[in-house]
Length: 500
Image (tube, rainbow, N blue to C red):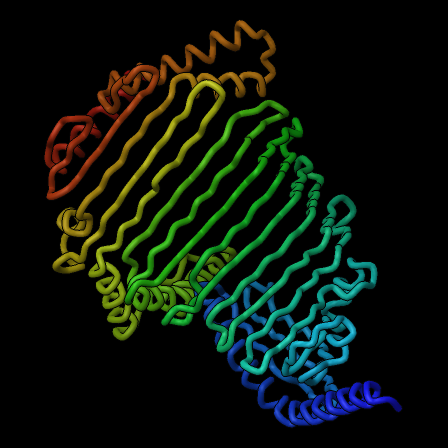
């Protein structure tokens, strides 16, 4: 044996010895690590399901430990309306011990890990229909690589589904491919996923058939765990094309380039966030309507107060709503909502805590843009803690709302565009008649708004603006008290109704 070969053999033997020793060590520690991860998973499941009529838990059913690999089985249980009753899933997991699992070596991944696992759903009486819908393929499976600091990365695959819901309804799903990574202690998490297509066709003897088709769904999340246990950060959902077919005439509504972006962050004890929704193109029966957006923002939300309110909703209001629904189904009156003194105190304290932070909620933009115009509405609301939540309604409202701003800009050409599309949908075909009727509709709407003094005309836009602060209302340049404003609006609305 030459010197080089001897060195190489020595390296191989050393690596093998280290790997075997490390695998043995990992095997002895594996059960404790798994149990701790299950505890953390159950905490997160509990947090995620706050506000839903559901509970879920994960447990380790068995662990067959070996030197180089182990086999584990988990049980995921779910109860409540979210799961439509009781749900039980069994998941098998083949775990290769680190530091150098064979499956990673053959893919030339030499970075040491604690374990590399391959998990998949097991077939059971509860999942056999799911297996049938996937033509026998495992409905979901994936790989997870766990580092020695307990950070992890992996994949999740949902198999394609082709399912006949009944004789006239069906579901087709192309499958999901996602990558997931979490930092040590699960403080940070990233998820990226993609679905090529989903199609749901529904039909019944007493209604027109309907169909929903989704193409090019992209999911992305980049989250950090907050001090109160929830994940905050950025979430993005994008759809390249969505089509809904419905009604007796089988009308088709199409949305292209839909985008939903949400973000949240924690500053001290407060949370702020925003949610932006945009549609690049809206079409109805093949005719382009335009584009739209809805932009929300929230600031100064007290995190603990919000958590307390959600818990009260889950523990008190949800059971009441369920009991009321069941009573209505039996034709009985709804039961009386009763709070214990402790629950009343918790609600009052939570509301006061939230309002003391002076939360701000804003609909920054609700807009529709067509080929000839754009209409937009915005609303900003600043709240404050009143002296007492038991104040009379009028006085409570004055102290509760510290500031309100609302603006409306309604484009007459946009209204005409929408009216023209509606006329075409109703079967009108004469282009001249459609143009005249749509223009008349826009003019009539603007004339009514101006005549009632609820809006003003600014070029081709009907505009209205409201500002409230310190018990003073400024409505389209007119200053008045809250009581005067309410009386003014009621008189104008009543007058408009009497003229019809």
